[in-house]
Amino acid sequence: MKKEQKIFVTRTSMPPYEEFAEMIKPLWDTHWLTNMGQYHQELEKELRDYLQVEQLSLLVNGHMSLEMTIQAMQFPAGSEVITTPFTFVSTTHAIIRNGLKPVFCDIKPTDFTIDETKIESLITDRTVAIIPVHVYGNVCNVEAIEQIAQKYGLRVIYDAAHAFGETYLGHGIGSFGDASVFSFHATKVYNTIEGGAVASKSRELYEKLYNLKNFGIQNENVISDIGANAKMNEFAAIMGLCNLKYVAQNIQIRKKKVQLYNEQLKEVSYVRTPEFDHPDVKYNYAYYPVVLSTAEKRDEIYDALHQKNVYSRKYFYPLTADADCFGSQYQTCPLDVARDISSRVLVLPLYPELEDEMIMSIAQMIQELYN
View 1 (tube, rainbow, N blue to C red):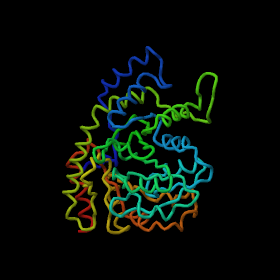
View 2: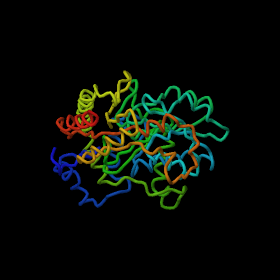
View 3: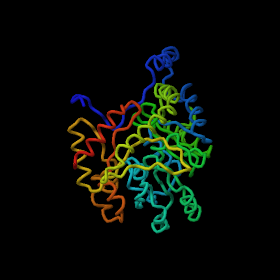
View 4: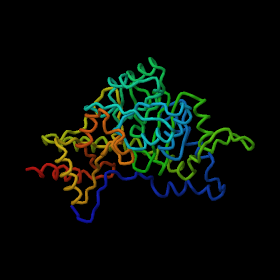
C-alpha cells in the first residue's frame, strides 16, 4: 500500500464533469439559482418515481428535512418522542430543537434497529411520536411499529438517511409511516452535494413543508408560519439529476464490494460481518459495519488502520444519548445493547471506486493484527 494514499470510509459519487457542466450552463442565462426553480421541480418528480412515493419535498439537507417534518406535525411543547440512540446525533437534535423530549429505546443486537418489543413500555400520556432509524440500510420492523402507533395514536417519522433506494416487500422504503426523511449528503449512496427530502402520502404535509422551508411565506402578502430557509438550490438539484442516472449501477458495485469483504473476513473469529440478508429487503449497501469481539480490539484495529492511512469510523460512537452536549441527562437510560454495540462497531471503507485489492489489503491487516 502506498503510504501517501488515504482511504476514507466513504467517497463522494460524482457524475462525469462534462455532464454536470453542460447541465448547469442554462443557469447563466436564467439566473434562477434557488426558490424551487426548474431543476428543483424536475428532481422532485424524478425522485418521487425512483423512490416509489406519493409525495416528496426537497430540502437543503437531511437534518432540516427531519427538523421541519417534526415542526410540521405541530406537537405540543414538551411532548415525548420515542427514538433510538444508535444514530447520527442529528436525529436527536431535531427532536430537541423542536422543544420535544427524546425518550431512548434500546436496539436489537442483530440489525441495530430500534427494538420494537421495548417501545410500548416507554409510552406515556405525553408520547406523541416514534422516530425509528433504518440504520446502515437495515429496515426496521415497520409492521410492529405501525401496530403500536395505531394502538396509541402516535405519529411515525422514519429516519431513512441510510436507506435511499431501498424497498421492502416491493414498496419504496419512504412509503412507510407518516413520513420518511432522506439525506442526500455528499457521503451518502446518492447525493445532491448537500440535500434532503421528506416522503409521505400526505399532500397536506407536502404543502406545509413547502411553506416552512421558505420562511413560512405563503404569498407576497402573507407569512403564515415561523419557518426557515431550507430550500434546495438549483446547482444541488442538477447534481442530483446527474447522479440519479448512476445510482442503481453504483449500488450493484457496492453489493459486490460487500460480498468481497464478507469473503475475506469470514474466517476471522473476532469479526462479525454484516448480513444484509432479509429476503424482503432490496438493500443499497450504504455502509460496511463490522462488530469486533471486544471494545479493545475495535480500538486497536481502528488505530492500526489509521496508521496505514485507512480511515474507518466508530459509527456510531458515542451513542447520541451519551453525547457531551447532554451531560449525564440520559446516562441512566437502559441501553445495554446499544452501548455494547457502540463500543465494538467499526465501519470500514466502502464506495464504488474502492479497488478490490484495497479491500483485500484492509481485510488482511485486520486478520494479521492478532496472528
